[in-house]
Every structure is written in structure tokens, then in C-alpha cells.
Image (cartoon, rainbow, N blue to C red; front, side):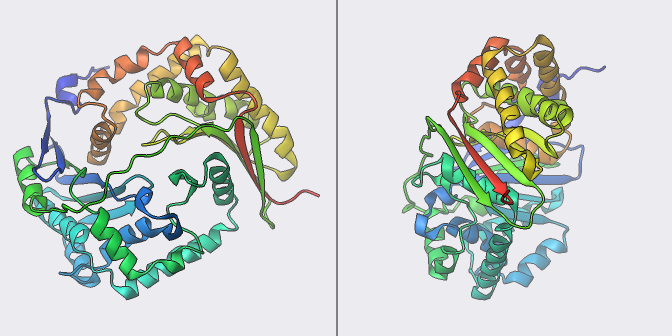
Length: 429
């Protein structure tokens, strides 16, 4: 098997160009002339964390409306300009940040950045398009009232986090808050929170770093917002010190959703790697790890069963989920808890740890096969402060993890009789 020449074959500090423009925008460029395309992605500090609770959904609606027309181009002109070049731009707002991505032929990078600049800086918020978007979101929210996975997620989030925590809320808003959001609210939110300070733009593809940086500066270099609001950080959160259980009745369903979990580490936490390894062993690797093996394969109690570690900008959840026959709910939960108990009382086996280490390092080249994959990795490196040499250190980070590290991380976040449990499905008489 050929080996990678890491300094040449993976993005690192020697081949990623990184500059900070005078207005605060950070630009990262990785040249890849093996393709004819160019991909860009980035973030802006305009997530739902900046909206007021009574206007829940404002950040998401604002982001969704950006591509519906600008002060310079209406909807048809904007999209015709992209479509005739085969280019694409997408924008959405999460809890912490707004994210954007785009793809085009390398020769059309100036077009991609010009349009991105236009929609981010000069949105028109045309009322007919905003109302259509609002209607689509509210229809989706009504539909989700009968979706057991959405309902169990909502109930779990509202039990795990306090009402004053941004992770308590959905970024899409509610049927009560969305109707109260006005066009003026969108304009004010945009004027207050869309700014170059803290913005990241990553470009990967068949373009020189010098050309890419100059093009970004051409369309974004003069952007200023001196009156921007203060940067917000995600507040901390702690797992409840007791069992918190909630049931959401959803009639007419043949499957019940179980979601059980705790507060987990952020992506920047020192023990994130150990916790992520523990999570893989618990409910990801192979056929969904130990959870999949015990709950689904051996016991036949679930249609699916797995675990997930969010590991984002703030204290995201570490969860185990399962879809079961309604009559099997009280049988499946003890099986899940048994595997969690085993994870926090026994070291994982040598074979489990070795298999997962090889899996994590072995899939890295696959993540770097496309411009999209490379862009995502570089953006994460910058966003989470991992350092541009992260990929050079990645194998060492993974293979240095010990059984004791994995056990300690599991024990830090999971405690006996301290978890949140949400169940959504038909009521059993």
C-alpha cells in the first residue's frame, strides 16, 4: 500500500495560504489543480444565538431569504446568473453561526464571490419571497408535529437544557414565534449582526492562492460594520443530577423513538478525541457499535439503534437513540443503560480500540478526495482552533489514545442515574 507524503498530500501549514484582511475576514486557500472546479465555504457570526427568544427563528429566516433577491438583483436575475454558469450557492443559519458554501468552475470564482458578497451585504428581503419562506417553514413545523423523531428531539432538548440556553430552542422557530417576525426584524438583524469581523472564507480548487485572496479582497475588502453587536459565546451547560424523563404522545404511529443522553464535550474540549472514540465504540463503529449489537442484533428490540456525539461549538449532547416497537420501549431502555454502564465501568478491549483507531485514520484520505471534503476540514481547523498542522498530527492524536483515556472521558460525561430520556410515539394502554 502506498504511503502518504504528508507535507505534500494533505492540507497543512506549508500549503494552505492564510491571511486576515484589514476588516477582520480570515481567508484560507488550498490549491488543487487535479480538478477544474473551485469550492468555497465559510461562516459568519450571525447564528440563532444572536436572536431574542420571542423572535425564535429570526436568524434562520434571515439567512434563507438572502438568496431571494438583493438591492441589485431580483430573484430571477440572481439565479439565472448562477445557473448559466453551472454555479451554486447555499446559505443557512445554525445556532452559533451562519454557514455558506458555493461551487463553480475555477474560472467562475469571481462570479461566485461577487454573488456571495451581494447576497450577504445587500439583501432586499422581498416581501413576497419572505412570506413564501415563512409559509414553507410553518408547513414544515406542522408536519413535524407528527414526526416522532422530530418530536423526541424537541422534547429531549427542552429537558436537557434550561430555557435560557440557546440549545433549548430550534433554529427554525415555532408556530408562535414565526408569525411575529417582520420584514423590519430581518433588516435590523442583518444590519446588526452581518459583519466581516470573525468571518471565515475557505477556497479550495484549481486557482492560485494569490488570485483567490485578491478576488476575496476585491468583493469583501471594503465591507465595514463598525456598529456591530458584541460577540456572544455559548453558555455552559451541565447534565441534570437526576433522571429526567418525558413522553410525547404521537398517535397513529407504529414506531416509538427513544432518545437518551447527557451534555457532552465541545469540539474544542481537551477530551473530545477520547469521548469521540468512546462514542464510536458505544454506538457507531461497524453495525452501530455495542448499542447496535446488543439492542438491535442480539435482542431484536430496535429497528435502529446508535449513539451520537455532537461536539460542536458549545456543550452539545451525547445521545443514544433507538426506534422500537411501542411494546418494547421498557425492554430496550435497560439494554441501552446496560451498555452505558459497561462503558463507564470497564475499559474497552484492545481489539475495539485498535479497530476504531484504524478506522479513524484509514478514512482520512477518503475525506480529502474532493474539494468539498478538503474545504470542510480546513474550515473546521480554523473554526475550532485546531491549527493548520492538525492533519499532520491527527494520526498521532488518535493512536496516542489509551483505554484509560476513553474510560475517563466516558465517566466524565455519563453518570449513573443522571441523564435525560425522551420518548415519542403512540400511547400504550
